[in-house]
Image (cartoon, rainbow, N blue to C red; front, side):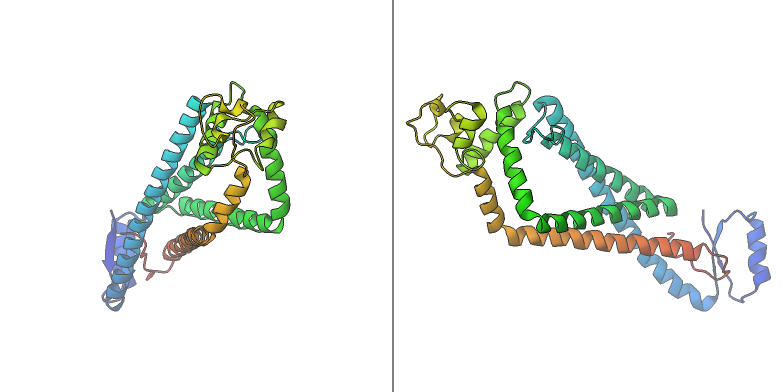
Length: 287
């Protein structure tokens, strides 16, 4: 329960009287003179609106994190090591990546929701730090990717080629399904070409989805026509065609993160400022 004490006559003794009535337990939140009350009330209304906007945004963020975490767990349980493309990093499967991203999003959204609705400086500060770490990590990864793009590309190709050897293993049904879908939808075969499958499977066969005319066991017939282009090339082509769209999405995400960091920083600043020892401080964050 918040008590608003309006010191119309600027009498400290009058305000101290009410502070003693409430036992000095911090119930007295606003000590204003008559001329300041209207201005502070307007500011309080604006920040109150921002508070609930921040809560709703983080609630959506938290729900998205819960959804990603659920999908990742489902993939892990039903598909095993879903899409473990690289044998060098067996833990780096699609399921584990979705679980990790979902957990990070869920924890971040939870801190933001609770910090906003409870108006807790510690939670808001934790939320700000997590956002800042995520933002810095994204920028560092982006810079490293562009600086070492050629090396990253070569290593990715080699890891994907090595991962083809897992295609027929029993505990990698998800990987097999992923390659089948990619090759059928993108009309490609292997990483750089259909001969990648010959090296990986140690015989001159390819998955049936590599056939231009698909039928059962068509990949074992060497006279069939296979898709000649590799899937890595098709992915690079798709990224090139959609680079403007992807860049726009990335910039929007970056702007949202920066603005959210600024909003949280502003809220923390107001929270600290308004909890000071100044008798006429206006605690505008609370509604």
